[in-house]
Length: 456
Image (cartoon, rainbow, N blue to C red; front, side, top):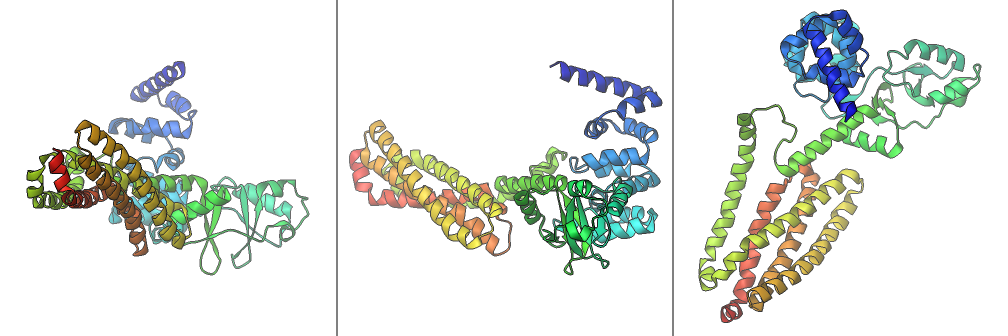
């Protein structure tokens, strides 16, 4: 508790120094904070206070801070455009290239071009190349600040080069070995370089089996590779094995976070990351889904009206409609979540199609049978009508099994035709389960109607 209070007091003190324009003391205390803490303080300020920071901090100091927070705040581009163009250009040139490109890609095309035109030619060309890579590929998230050496040099010369370039590199735990034509031929860890004899040749100690990814590889596949191999970074190459850049583990953490948010958004049928939009904007984005589901729901209502005669003969049937549809919908959503997750982590698509579907059908039969037996006993003793309990129990078994089948089959089919499985959202599965559950329930009830009516 004390630490929280101390932190709050520090923030108040820092804000007071900023507002009173005590620049030297503000800089001293602010730059002593961790970059993440600096970023959170910056994001908490209003526009007037931010403009004071721009006057107090150098572009390099701002760049270091933005390198840490650029993935954490979707409104950061609004802050960029409130700065002077020359200040922005100096910041972008001081940031790691992949982070600067992320910011540029979120800006209006004309605005981004304005900043690129003011940059140093070499930097501008490099960023334009990265901007041309397709979104969510290795090329779009790779950094070009890395250290490479050639095979025909000594450890001593490699360490000298490393010392010169280390400050600019995003990560130096791995040093990549390239040919004279910049083809990736090996890799050496920083530890091996440090402990090796200074006169040893790089080609005699490098690891020749290098795990790399294509520049066009999907970012989710890159994330799997870094997870599977426990890498801190992975090199990115073109079709001719030329080294183009590296992807670091911090970028992959952002990718995993983005993919998880995307999957959850699909399951919920809403953008869960849209935290800065107004209630009106949020409503506009959600309405298309809700209206679509409304019409799908109308088909369920229409189906129920088709069985009005059946309900009029045994009105007790209407009491349990929501129970069956709700339970089946929950089961379908569970199956959908499991299917999407298994598809995301598995590479064996054939195994996914057969084993996953069969597993979910079996799971549906087991859970449906247990749930059906429980509801059969509950309804039988509660309403003193065991035929009614039997109808509801059988309907529950069938509805849950079908819902599990749909929840596992739909995302697999969507992936096979090239769509993101996560867009088979929970609301859609729930509505589909409602439709099938009602159909199953009343057809079974029709078969047992003489027994139900006789027991009422």
